[in-house]
Image 1: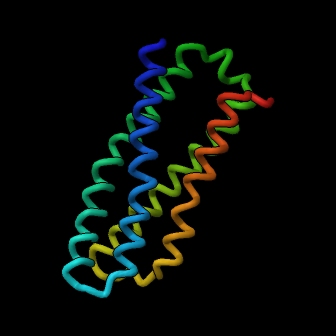
Image 2: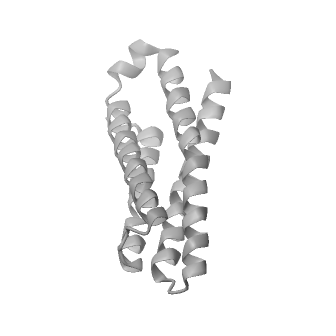
Length: 139
């Protein structure tokens, strides 16, 4: 079980690293007026999204494997249900990122760099919620 937990934590860290950096690329994309820079940033965003998506799946599958190791405890742990809601919010954020990356790649996205600066803060809030729930187990 400790191996599963360690691998889950590693996958979550990698997922969050990517999900933190992706909107930063989008900030630079939206702020750039140089077509060559914008094209390069669009490629970077697409490659990063394609890289972190399997990591996200791995993090979720490892988390489910951890839950399966002790179903009776985890299904009755209220803090875990809160964490699962936060993970669902992160998955939705991840999907929204994918749609934005697709729009950026085709040149159809017109969000400002300010929008992406605010958008970039959403996963920080989700991470804070998850860490507090897992560490403090407040309920």
